[in-house]
Image (cartoon, rainbow, N blue to C red; front, top):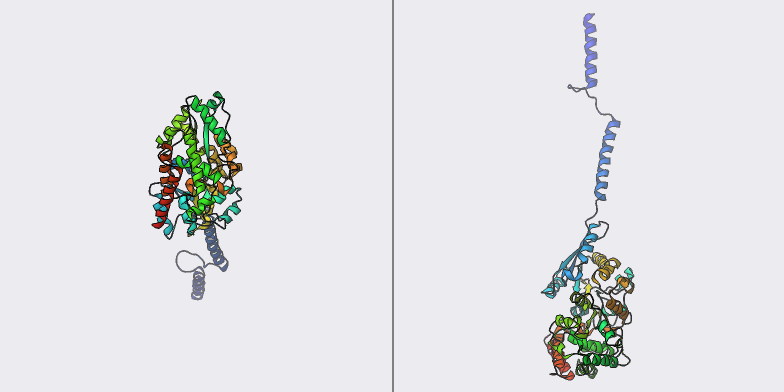
Length: 455
């Protein structure tokens, strides 16, 4: 009986051991419910991790902007771009690359020939003419329409190649400067000189200045300001069409109408309107010094030189620009204008959308209004110029409103660098009395033909 009872006890113990499992842990097998919960937990963790990774901001594409100017010329841009780049909600990161003029054109040429060009390049008008004509720049009419900027019509006409029958836009012009005559407002008031509005009145004003021991108009006759004298008259008398034809070898720079415009400049020299000492000023520093020291009543250049005048003058020196000056009767346009350099997207750019995003910021309202207030620049959307306070630039902004035609195109940006160099030398010699108007332009045409033959 005892043996039977013991056997039953041992059997029960073995059964209990089988139920609790082997080893010392004493843990029971996982139930179906517990197994399912673990799987769901793993799945939840995976989903959470994926969601966390998806919330991380995507790497923004970098936009390279090649710039021919020095940083000091647009000193507000780096600060504004840094602020833009720091905001992760903006679609791209902008990298401003300042190179200066030395070797810049060669670098751009090499970059545009490569497989991965920069998204934006700055081009001077003369080089822009060639790149846009060759199909190397993206057409931007659609981009401008999307942005809705109310651009000056002259600036948009400027933004295509010289031969542009479809009025394509291949670059965004930066700043606008009108070809102008600065005058000493206090000196004019002291001598009782009314602000002149035509060549006859300008000649009379010059005579009054000369009779009182002052030079009338001074300028840098040994640099770009020499052909600027011609640009003032050429725009009003000849217009742009002949310049485009001459560039395309369909007309000549020594056309009789161009000789007539140069003759008007020569007559201004001979009558004392333009002082002959201008031929001695290789840089504009000397001409500006004569003006701000009160030795000359007027200085001629374009409105971009206002900053150079301001940095040289005493606080009590006051000046403005002549509001309206007709060098000929019934002028084709009110004033000659340079719309500056072009900011372009290469036609073979890899990321067009990123390039347009950066261009939209750099030439959008925020940066452009900063250019007006911080740099004292005239921009190409009239309403954005509301922050101008400089008297001369306010006058120039008004001039610009009436200069929205292709005939306003600035001569200096419409010719090759070789033609321009020889035009400078020729006009300088003409001011000295050693060259005739026809002789200057005959030589210019010869240089252009030689340049074309070498291509």
